Length: 320
Image (cartoon, rainbow, N blue to C red; front, side, top):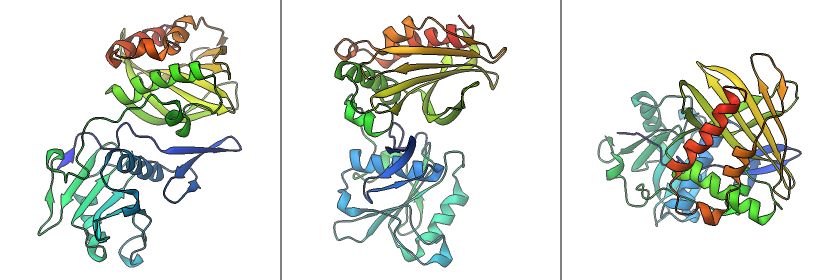
């Protein structure tokens, strides 16, 4: 049975920044990889297994070799039972690839020489899990094996978590890092809003902003979406990037630099209709983002997202 939301939802791959490039980091292989959609999904699922399942990392492997004539020759993720026999085979697809019976059959074919009793297919958005013995049976999330059964959503307000995943830089002022970590936890962990890995190109700049973005509806514009993220931009520095989209067309892009002390500066708002660069009033956004973590604790994400969305809507859809 297809799970409405992947167990990987709310998990993000670890990042290593080398020469300004955000590389994917496999914590089991202790190796960096260039960004590829399938690799991101694999590492998101790996994060779920490490942080939320009861399977020890000693029984989780990536890229296990299998006879290549049946597939590309290596598994994505293979979990073993306590006797170190194959137990769960996970095959990953890019997040824009739909998963269904055909892809599940491919994995079953792939499992001939693995003989794992469970197979999971995932694109990081939705999952398909099958009990393979004696015949393949699709499982509802409520029927997942206890080792991987979805439980409470994972949350973290620790700056080290968000630093390790490319949202925040190292060496940022502790108060600013704590405030931004609490914000990110509310947006990306505690809310049910969609998120997507996007690339935004800022006009008049050579910079490209590629990262995971929160997607939310614009409160006063039913036909519009807002995208928002915080990403590390260098030692101690970060940047807020947000964009408006109306009827599948970008209306504006906002960037706000954040220095090591947590000071917001150099805001630029570029409206698509005229490509003019505006220096906007970002005080409403800054106030929301830097609210102390102690003040944010206990507040539901549902209260914070509308406030942020309204502030971004004024800028990105109306150019104010």
